[in-house]
Amino acid sequence: MEIIFQQKKLKFDNKLLPENIIQIINELLSKDYIFSYFIADGIEVLESHEDYLNQYINEIGRIEVFAQTVIEFVNDILLSAEDYIIRANPELGTLAEEFYDNPNSDSWSRFSQLLDGLQWLSDMILLIGDSTVKPLNWGGYVKVSNEMQGILKNLEEALQNEDNVLIGDLIEYEIIENFKALGKEIQKSIDVEGRRYDLS
Image (tube, rainbow, N blue to C red; front, side, top):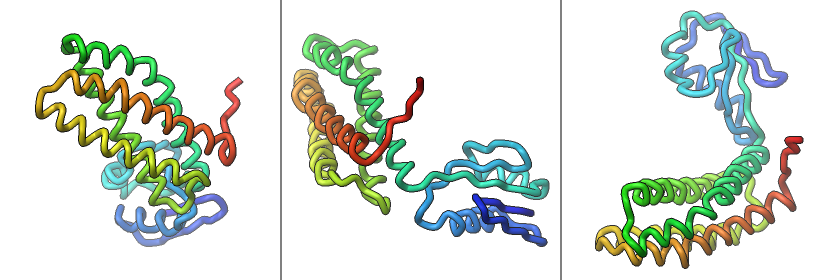
């Protein structure tokens, strides 16, 4: 079996277990790269990597590993977060109004999506915080993240108390402001340190 990453090509005579392959890939990447996907004998494996290895381990002859630098990864995740915030912002005012009136099943579904989005943004900030590369304005992210954690606790309390008006208030006066603050930090990071991809 051959495992290739950039200019490095490793050959193994003996059969490798999936755990061995994952360990070798992690060693090749070290702390400078974030794993993206691999191509096994011409087949792109974009997800469920370990499952794929378990299923086809005896047939695989060549694995080509693809990864991003930590800087590229942080830039891409910030671009995704910025895109999410831009798309979510117009919906938040309407959602808050629905909770002031009387939320219907669609309101609750969109609220659930908002909670998922808040959790994703929170996880994104933690992930970048654990990485070897942080934006220069990292202190701003920490402040926004701390505020976001407080908002999530208040939302949990409002849900337990079935207080729809409080949920509306939290969306209108705290989440919208939190999203604006995070959006500004992200824009600053990308404009100063990162890059936007020209899609034209």
